[in-house]
Amino acid sequence: MNRPDCADLVAACDWSATPLGPRDRWDPAVAVTVDLVLASPMPMAFSFGPAYVLIYNDAYADLIGTLHPAALGRPAGDVFGDLWQNSGLGEVIEDVFHSGQPHAEPETQLTVARGEGGRLEQAFFTRGHSAVRDSSGTVVGVLTVAAETTQVTRRLQSLGEL
Image 1 (tube, rainbow, N blue to C red):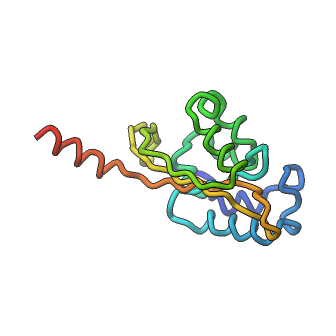
Image 2 (tube, rainbow, N blue to C red):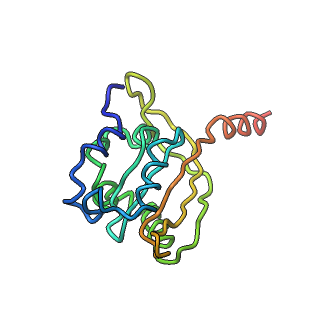
Image 3 (cartoon, rainbow, N blue to C red):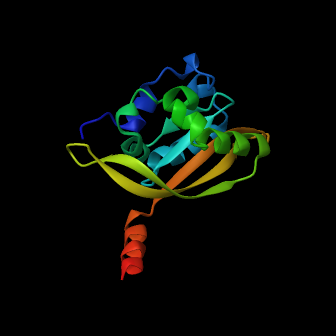
C-alpha cells in the first residue's frame, strides 16, 4: 500500500495544537517513547494523556488500515469510536493510565488489511499495555505493543482438528 510514513507524519505534525504541545518541549521520556515506537518493526502505539492522543508506527498503521493517517495525533476514543467503548480496549488503556500497572491482553481476533490491494483478513494478536512515565515519574501515557499470533493459532487449530 502506498501510504505516508508515520515517522514523516510525526515530524511534520503541528503538535502544539494537541495536548502534547510543541515537540521541542516534550518531556525527554515522552520523546524517547515516541522514537522507540517509530523505530520498532512491531506494531506499537503511544496513547498520550487523559485524551489518549495517538502516535503509532507503520506496523500499527497496517493494523488500523483506513483509519490511518487521520488517526495520528487524535484522541483514541474519537478514532476508534464504538470499538473503544464496547470492546474493552478503552477500559484497558484507561486502567493502565490510572493505575500505572501493566496489562497483557489474551489473544484477540482482529480484521486487518493485507498486501497491496488491502484485502481484509482475520488475524490474531496479543497485546501488552504499559504505563509511560515522564521524567518526574508521573504516568503520562500508555504504550501498546501488539504481537501477531495468527500462524501459531492456526497451527494449534489444525492440531486440534487432527
